[in-house]
Image 1 (cartoon, rainbow, N blue to C red):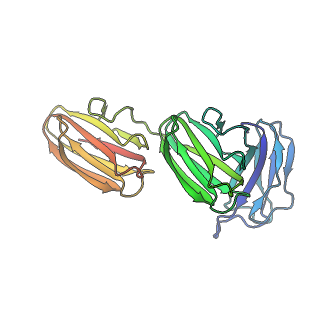
Image 2: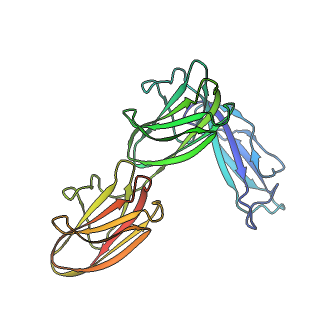
Image 3: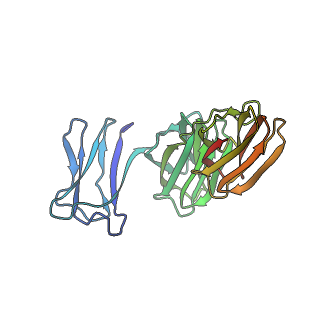
Length: 311
């Protein structure tokens, strides 16, 4: 745990013939020294939610053990939430509460405080996922805004009871702003953020021909198009006439979200396609310099893709 808080463990069954049977396992909690601090004996029935344990900020272990003779093999899903309280006076960007992935904060909207602001710092590009559920807040009483480092709104929604959405972002500082819908909408809510790194190996910046990344024969690049970055441009050089093949496959990019363009040395489009999930094409080219441009279809089409060029 990154800071003091309350830990809750949830185990659910995926269903089907390969699922772990009811009472087929026990779950145990251990301190960093290996001392048991909680858990089950005699198995549990799905779904299982642990009692709350208030813990200090150190390392803990969770062990799921099959019970002999009960049919102790199978699949299960485990989710660990740890909760902390909202910081005081987190109503401005300057006083925003810092959050870490996996941390759930119980916040409140009151007559005096109409908002709570939380800060996420991403050290690498990736997908920030935000989940909000109301606790005592009235239904449809939450307004949620995503803000960039300057406080400019980049996404969100209004008048919802629960919320689960993501934005693909470059490294940087971002804020989640929780605002009450009106004076009659007060109460508590739970906010959780999770982060999945893009894992891209492209060389940024590469969104112009001048900064295009040089591709070598047989190289596969994992690229990333984010909220801030709408295109990637790659360069390859032929020393003699060749038949060149370009392959593009989506990874986390949505279906039909890829636009692929072939450009000549002057940036003129010589071939390409739009709104595809995968792309494979070949062209006979003279010696010279060429570019492959990968563009997101629109702002809602972001994520990772794989690109390879062969000749």
